[in-house]
Length: 608
Image 1 (cartoon, one colour):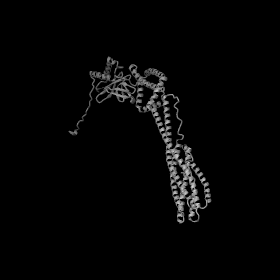
Image 2 (tube, rainbow, N blue to C red):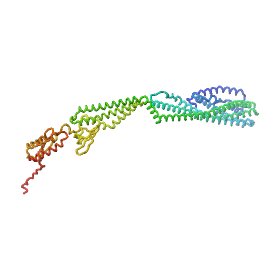
Image 3 (cartoon, helix red, strand yellow):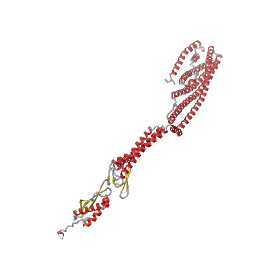
């Protein structure tokens, strides 16, 4: 209750203690100057003097109406109110102890009077009433304590919430600044609305804290008013008892003391009535404040709802659409000619770039190795490379044009470029095979490693090239199957149709054949084929006898070779085989079947 966190309370308590010390000697002097309460030296005399001494040792009466309640909404007002409540708590504790002592000493006096047969019955009854009054006073102090504790808790909570909310309001944003684009103005407006909503929420929170404080203060005031009302009634009872004894038939000193009690009780009753009236005024004020606080809460809630609805409208798709339509309108009026001019320049640029790409492709291919006698070879490769470069150029131009268009309508393309770069990096990691196919296909076309119509062996597949793209090669085998081979998987290849080719022919003749005659017949057949119109354009020179290549089990293998134009190896091989068979038959040169000689050993003489 009185911790180190409340320095104001301790200052007030020190002031109260000083006042109490200054008042106590005066009470003692008054006690000494009043004479004895009852005559004699017996127990009644002693207890009566003790009761009178206890009564005169009265604490200070603290009123809660010392400070005006209007300043309780400020931090200093709340601190002052807490200090006053601390004084009130200390004072009521003193009063509780005071009436507990009155109860004890009065009860002792009642017992002493009852023990003395000649005691005045009126005095006994008065002291009995005083004992009951003291007990009621002690009980009423507990109501004070509960009410004051509730008021202190409410004030402390209100002070903490006020300190938390202090400084939470910041300067509102201004939407009157003319910004470049409607998007930025919309963004600033939404930020301002958000700030205003948060400000209203803070004010609503503050109003809610005030209402809770007022509600708890209202409950405390009700309890305090009940205690004050009871105190007024008890003070009236004090006056009644004192008046009866003052007018009674007791001793002069006894009646004079009760006259003093009546006078003090009357002043106390007046002060208590004043406090009770002030408490009623505070109660009515709290009720009005509570009604106003509830109205304030309703106003803040309705204001928040209105601002939130305005924010939702601005943040919705319709708000974005309004900003977009305004942007488009402004752009059409002010900036559209720039975009049209930029697109026209891009169109001219892409046309020039495409022409330049075709020329560069032809120059590169003309310098690369190729078949100068086959114009379709250069055309096919040129079209392929040109299409690749043209596609890349178109994509680049479209991207640049799109970015320029977005810049013209006020869109910040910086984050977009960052996103595209990240997306491109992700695609490059996910499509490494595709990139490898394209790069390898580009160098295949550039270096003219093979062309359409050539006979090749790629990845174990032999056939004629039907189509070459930047990503794959299509090879058709002699049996009709088409093999689609990704260019990235081509690590090595065999081109059987480049410049010239050799059609070898291997023929087996018998061991009894004349090899000189075989050579002569083979060369004659070669001259005949070379002289024929059908094969003359295909052959670079007459087929000729090369020599013996193998001495087999049943035949001697000789080789005849024909150098032909690329792609005619198979046809020339078949023709050579045919003509050599016919010529060898005419010359009597044996082409033997496979033979096997079996040796059978003679039986030994031991077996006969």
